[in-house]
Length: 338
Ligand SMILES: NC(=O)c1ccc[n+]([C@@H]2O[C@H](COP(=O)([O-])OP(=O)(O)OC[C@H]3O[C@@H](n4cnc5c(N)ncnc54)[C@H](O)[C@@H]3O)[C@@H](O)[C@H]2O)c1
Image (cartoon, rainbow, N blue to C red; front, top):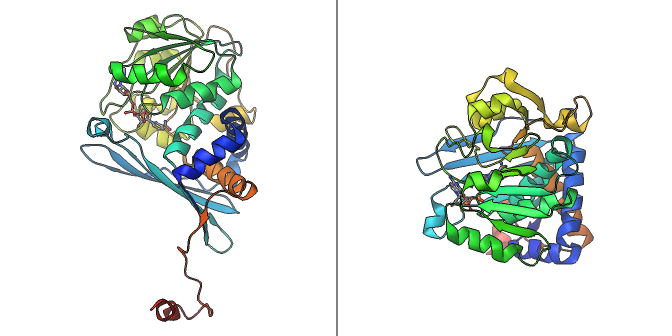
């Protein structure tokens, strides 16, 4: 069984390159969303604590079974810990044997950005050049890089209530050819931008900005609100927007649309990917991708990483599964190791 560590992901990105990895990942996510009917899908299993949420996210087709363990604890950074950490597994459905166990904290940031970029391909104006990001925490840079894979981004406007997080974002983005515009308020950041990413972590309903604060035609990738009682947009803004979700039953429980009715949802992402429904229909529409993270995205990511790990000989083989000489003699494994 292959183990993929954080170091292995670093190696993989060095070999392939960040942009090329995003390209492959966006293609993998799109390809799996286009096979929507082939998947066993379910709402994730979430357990809620005062400090945050812990979730198990399974998804499977006939060949692979994948699941991810992930948390969301907005208070963690104050203790020097990440808000979101994750581990994922991919198994062979023919035998049930696990094939891969992988770090998924980096991969969650990658796949969330890749899925957001994919949704924006259908929902944002194709000439979008400016992006505002509200909340410059752990996920932020991944999103800029993911969106810049599909859009000719020039201007990045950003705001965080934590000035140290803004300085960190400026440092990390400085080597890239974007015009970086640190803002002193959310309103200043979202003013006249083509796309807005909301990536704040706060375990409460928030209204980061209102409809009148954004320009006609803005696309919003709303990814920070992702559990009950944790939202970033107002109902008024949502009602004025074309809303696309990943998986309706989960979105109604955990997404921005927990404030709305099912009838307020225009489509699920797979319907845009398969051309059953049109994405953006005119230059003035306000569009929202209400992203909370769906297990299919982790499936696509693990499937791709498994393929790349074999191709580039990344990862280590660790004996997490016993291999007795006789398949019925599990007990002998104990004797062999004594
Ligand atoms: N949709 C998905 O699939 C998905 C995937 C990963 C993470 N998330 C969610 O995205 C959010 C961001 O994740 P992260 O790992 O970057 O968290 P993080 O804690 O590293 O960063 C969040 C940032 O938001 C800032 N912030 C909080 N309230 C704000 C406000 N009102 N205005 C401006 N900034 C504010 C914080 O100061 C912090 O810097 C979390 O809520 C997380 O649960 C969603």
